[in-house]
Image (cartoon, rainbow, N blue to C red):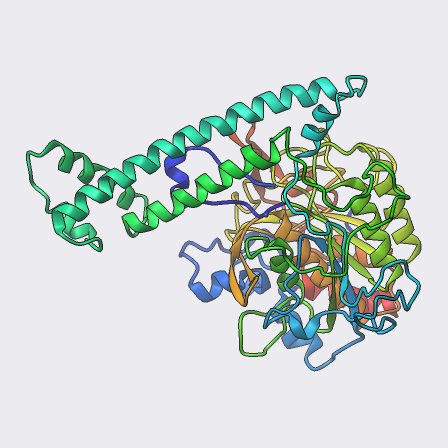
Length: 539
């Protein structure tokens, strides 16, 4: 599940481009008589606020963050707690990043690079985690793989066929639209550069153009339209559209490409027991653009107060890097084995910022979730970025069949919040569901680490899940006696119970609902409250 792609010309294109980057107890520790009386922030966030908003406090800052900084200032202070291993089951993680290299898990039972499985866990030289993708990265979507299989007896084959046809036409339409806009911008920029004799002409200079030349008039109109959409220059517009085209072409040529042969590991993905030559011990990204796992890891555990980059939520965490999510849909086999690997090697929290709507071996994953529960591991899952009710629309992985009985009590599914408290508080892309989404947490415009010592904002429930995983790690660090099930209960029952109505869904399916109608808890996660409730439960 990739972060949400948001081009600068988003408003120009009229279509959102989404890329797959229990009831409450009434316990409220924050002294608020009525949380819904909090003022709505009407000014734009400063750069500092935006880059840190998920850590801020609703009462103090009028921003629906998780009160992380308040928890450190008033509750944790200098209490380091017990080290907690958090497995990031995702794309590659840059374990050499300046803000992550000090928090990466090391398997002390393994002798590095001796070609021997010293700890007999089935993985040779797994020093910092495991790479279930091997040298591969580009992959099809799951429903495309179903069509390629030709298994017309599959009960969802016709659905997959219809979905493929719809999606292919949609992305071809977007490609045509972007191509046209790109050509218009190139034309206008060339004309204006020639007119001014320079490429760094300004908005003010463009506005002074007065000419009967038809080409120059058209170029002026294009440029003014670009400027009216808060884009600083034609150069920036070209860069953004080019990036959009690359992403669209990737969807068409990779994810929807029926002829793609992406898997390189040599195993049979439909045989859970086929482990020969399967993966390797390098969990790093295969290229700089494979940034999802690095961004997720930074949200959870970027080194705090080191004077560089940003602060992760948790202060005493080791990140176990498990590379299992390709540029496309993950294989159920990889997910199931990744969960078991994390559980067997000491992880107490697993972050899973991925998902899909087809899952041929979902039973393998449910069995792995149950196995993780037996090992006392909390599994934090991103709800998805399709603006859908996942009580109705299929969404995997899931700890139940549909909305049926859960196989375990260690899975918490997270929807995304935007930094604007009020009716637009739920991220427009976020999935929701009274049964299948447990809580909401910050997920729009989250600042975190990117490969090669870089940082940037990303959006998606992929960002909301690691925010919650970070709070879970804080709880398990400060109160290690609490079980995964208890931590889930705390996260759900200690959050702020927002009663105000919010907008969810998209297009004609937009609805106005309360959080209690679109999630099990009806709450937004709050680290400060969670630690207070954890202290009481631990006693």
